[in-house]
Amino acid sequence: MKKVFVTLATLSLIVTLQSCQDKNMVEVVVDEPVKEEAVVGNPENVKAEGKFQMVALPYAYNALEPHIDAKTMEIHYSKHHLGYTNNLNKEIEGKDLADKTIEEILTSLDLENKALRNNAGGYYNHNLFWEILSAEKSAPSGALLDKINADLGSVDNLITQLKEAGAKQFGSGWAWLVVNKDGKLQVGSTPNQDNPLMPNMAISGTPILGIDVWEHAYYLHYQNKRADYLDAIFNVINWNKVAEKFEATQAK
Ligand code: MN
Image 1: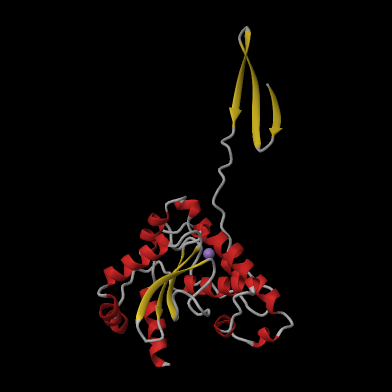
Image 2: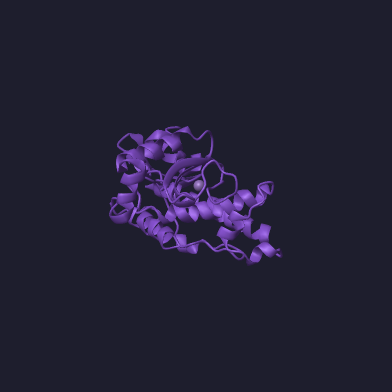
């Protein structure tokens, strides 16, 4: 008996030649191809360089499955969000801006400063986004629920408005629920990484919920079906956190 080992790329073949009576039979054993497992890393290993640091993800990358898949979460947090954070840090380094909070940077933003606009927005928006998601099912309650009913009619209306705002936002952007300057809840959207804290936005106020509608937020799992992603994400909204953010605006 003779064994020949051949390595061909990642596939290993074990060819066993066997003698059988008056003729040779060749038995080829092919290993199962190694399955490409969805290896996801640990969000705690994602570190930014500079003043603004990554806010810890309050759950694992796979925590929101099946609504948001682990690979999307990992790329979103460890590549896109980290990129905005590092680029924001480069923009403020050595400038007066470095002494400001992210909210101060956003509210006093010069919209012509595109690099700062995109990266400060990207940093803030994603911090909010991760915070208001959770695998634990929840629903609006207490003062937030009363306010939703008073200003927007019902929770169903709010969700319909948010889905519409996200679906209608052309290209990349965000759908928002804000407390506006009159103290009312209001739904709207902004393009790119703009947000309602920036000057002269179509929707203005303190964001208490933001939904990322960039393709990078859903394309791996939902491809072009943004509406399906928008339906799914309402399974993982952390309404307790949204309520907390609403109550913080009332305390001011
Ligand atoms: Mn994003």
